[in-house]
Amino acid sequence: MPGGRPRSFDTDAALDRALEVFWRHGYEGTSLTDLTTAMGINRPSLYAAFGNKEELFGKVLARYLDGPGAYAADALAAPTGREVVERLIHGAVDLTSGENTPRGCLCVNSVHACGPDAHAVRQDAIAVRKAGEAALRRRLEQATDLPSHHDPATLAALVHTITDGIAVQAASGRGHAELQQIGTLALRALLA
Image (cartoon, rainbow, N blue to C red; front, side):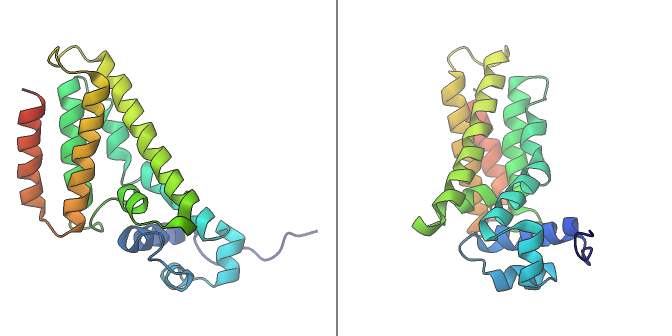
């Protein structure tokens, strides 16, 4: 027996549009109407293809990490510890204050702007951020070019604190050029 009508929309394109809406407005600031309007689908199609709003956000979060946020995983492949840190900080500036992206970071916004009703979404975003910090710590443990007084776990936490701060500043309207200057100064202080 056939499984119903085939989808009349491109699921990848719909996910990209949902990503942008969540990124701009946060999880709780995004309504189902916002999503269906941006995605060009009705609610039954959204539920059939992506599940409820929380499940859709999980799919969007994975898409974000594989798409716009992939710079972080790419940075870990840099040949030196210094380059890893540089790529992470400058990548955060480019991602969160770029001309073609919403301001701020989807993960940072989701952690800070979710109330008790969105606990699971907040926990998912926290888990993603913790995994990123743990991966950075492991990479920095392998680095031989960093000053010996740098503890990899503390340095990883500090780099994440700086990139989170960059995202918050970008979401508050601070410009790309100014954030690049802040990132450069942070790197000088970090890697001295």
